[in-house]
Image: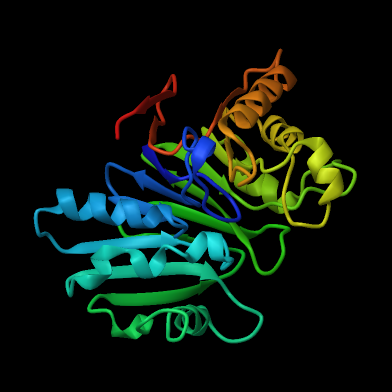
Length: 288
């Protein structure tokens, strides 16, 4: 299993002194041996993935599963800019949280249409299938196993666990930490228990979280707690706050590593462009 980080930022894209760790919002591509590529979220990083896919596709048909954690702008804004949607032989299977009113398909069609976007989602040449997901387990074509569970956030939000190629990944990009920072929800433990890699919401410092306790996110400290209680091998701090510079993120990374001293947990900060190869031992490298 190989993870390619096309978007690592939370809330909104950013630039300037934030470019080292990346300015695009949430989008991770999981490359597998038997199940092809699996896309996690459709933030602005999806645009870069689309261009990469077309450049290396050689004109072959594209069929992709896309797992959406939720429908806030930073996790869906890249969808209408995904260039493979301009190809008739593209089939995009979008799995996402069942909504309180209407279907996932209704919600996506409402987002991608005039006056918010020049054309409607149904007007793209590609085929887009939207499938409502709740707290359930299912398999993707090729055999990858997916576990979806509701995660505390603002609005219907899922976290995912992927098991493929004999390895396990958990993706929990938006997670409301409890007010006292105590305890990990059972649903989150079900996602994270014993995984090789956890990408987890690490948007705030403890001080920032105290001022934004109901904004739907976690602190660096709580991300480390989730990882240690779940016996995760490697934690990737994800969904960086748009106000955090590269220096801020590096400082928070050092803080997280200090918290984990004495445990077998290893920690990195998600950096746009990184490849994380899930093997033993884990490896990360820049390749684009």
